[in-house]
Length: 204
Image (tube, rainbow, N blue to C red):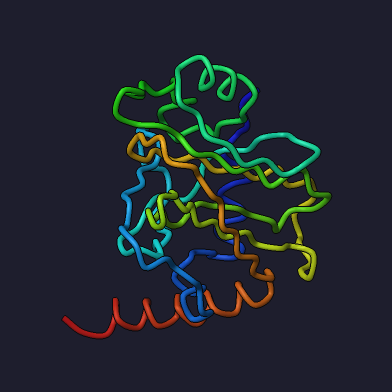
């Protein structure tokens, strides 16, 4: 099942959420070896960028996944990825349509995915924003936005998910999740966005 882009863009424009603001809230990051993460290879559909805890940035998640419960899992082969892709809802790309299932070299790469679980209203989100190898484990850092304190002018439910590519490893994978309330998140983003606009239009 695939999902149109309209809901996604509306949520982006309404809240201008990005992880940049959340960096004002202390976020634990491991002291081991930072591991690169990459989003699935498809055309970039949004200008908003998420800042990674390990440095750099990434595209915003473009996927939903219906589930009655939260899920966290690793995909190490194509059969598992096909099963995930069939169940996922992928946003359409303007002027492109629904992206095809990407080709992943599972001899060198694997996928890690998080599913927030169905929520009764919009305003929730989840994304992977860092990976680090320490103490013979691969730590996957996740930020989830709790939408319950906020009112939304958009009707509907949330079924947020994220999936990224990391280098293949046989180490145990540990998901470390931080939850941020949507009202705190939105206020942080408004301040960051305003500063960014002032810098953009002020001076050369």
